[in-house]
Image 1: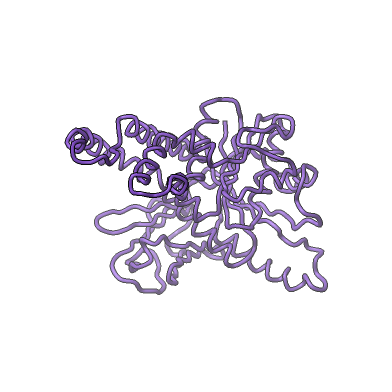
Image 2: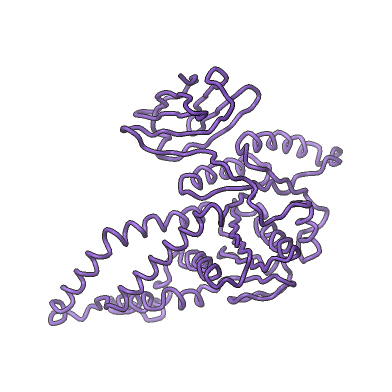
Length: 397
């Protein structure tokens, strides 16, 4: 089984790429499902057919699904939502308003990500493709299981015991709804489901993330930041999809300048994400809607390769805290320390080896720290970060 999660800045075409990948997988004989977790669904528009809250057949070996928030809330949050509704009603809110406010921001996306565990455990599909929300929302949701695991281990047992003690004491004095065992059990099961989802997505032999971008400066910068955080959270990125690239014959008239701009930013994409494979998809002469155009995109994107394969296996970067400092480690096989040059520019760290450059966006935890030094050890570049910010160049020791 394979789980492939597509993400990217809103409007880059990740839904089309997700649908095209799913169709290509199905045509190769894989039982495939593609699920949209974006609140602004466009998967049905991409296939040009209606989709529902349950898997809908769209082609041989292919199913598609768009999440309904009310359907998913009833599946994963029903007991918890009923308790929240009772508290809000107790505080004097109108019942209808309480019903709406009991649906927290992020519920839909988080619940839809839990479908990954449901589809995985059902064993009905060979390939699960997730057309996720835009990158900022996706990163926030992908980081949630780490918080949930800590809460389940450190806070939840104490909180559950406290409610058991408080419940009989409060009853004579107030009718404020206190969560019962059913609510606490639902919370526990929900947190365990999140932990299960995290284990599946961080299993690098099972799950990979693919970033979709366009050759534009702001889009590339956001993709770089996303790529950094995916590495920090332990999610493997096995491919970069550079979408809507103008073809080489677009050299005349209006598109001439756009072609030159894209050529410049295509080089930046290579510098930012190498050695992860980069797939480029042309700007088609027709909108990518319906199976015919999705087939055309899939053929252009994957050619004769298997879209379900893992395209990149190696580690690209690792951040850890050692001896009071942060250490960013970047594998550089077959490179001597004399060949490496580092340049720090605010939130960016540029690593240059000869004509090869790697442009890294630093996580927020490092942006306010000074680059203290770097060294090569076991074919890996280790960069240390400490106190206050400064910029400049350095060579590894």
